[in-house]
Length: 155
Image (cartoon, rainbow, N blue to C red; front, side, top):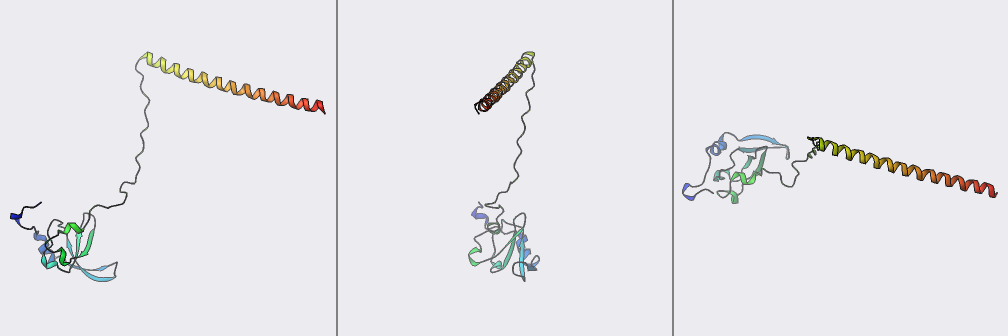
C-alpha cells in the first residue's frame, strides 16, 4: 500500500507511451484498424489523458486489451485489468511418474539367510498348491472314466 504523502504513482514510460508507442494494428477479432497504447508498467495509476482509449497491458506473456472508461480513471492501476494467472485451467497436466522401489541391500549374513529362507518357503508353498491341483484333476478324470465305463456296461 502506497502512503498518501507520496501521492499517486505514474511512471514516466506511461507519459511517453501516449505519444511514442501507439500503433495502428489490424485487430484479428474485428478486422479493422484500431489504435492501441502499449503499456508494460502495471503498477501505474491510469491517468486522465487515457479516457476512452484502447490500451494493451502486458501481463508477462501477452498483451491484454481493453477500453478505459470514466470509472477507471485515477482510481485503478493498469495491472488490475490484465490478469496474469490463468484461472480455472489445469496448468500442470503432466502426471509425475512413480519411482520404483529399489530392493533393500542386505548387509549381514543373517539377513541374507532370512531372505533365502522366505524365498524357499514361498517356492515350497507354490509346489504344494500345484500338486494339490494336479491331484484334484486326476481324481476328476478317474471319476469321469468310471462314470463312462458304468454307462457303457449298463447299456
